[in-house]
Length: 148
Image (cartoon, rainbow, N blue to C red; front, side):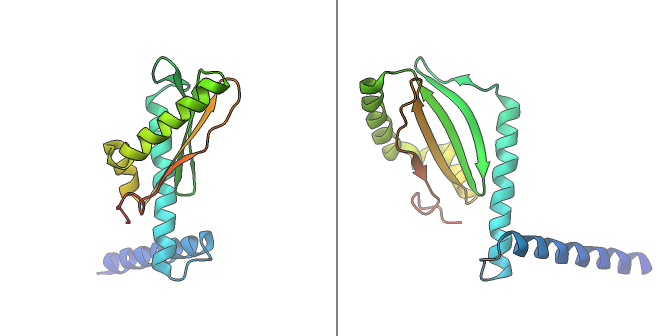
């Protein structure tokens, strides 16, 4: 009985510490539940990005002209940094095609849906090898009908 009491006390202490940490991380949260939910998303993003980086060597060639340069997690956002081998006019045209294609298919991609289903936001940050930067392409759970 005494071991059960100690285990219960330890469990309660961990719950209190977790709640305290979540609220400290997200003081803007209106409820403890909201603070914990936001903290869970941030932790999930960090763990997933570390896992992805362990499985692949960056930079990684995606196709003839595209390289995945980096994957980062900030808050509950996962950002894929990509580079396209193209001069300015080619890059502008490629960005339009990529943007159109991703807007049509991004929310249906199984790999994205897994991340979105965890409440994470996905950002594609695309640049040319010459330094031109495209408008980021962003997918949120709400936009894709997967509000957590």
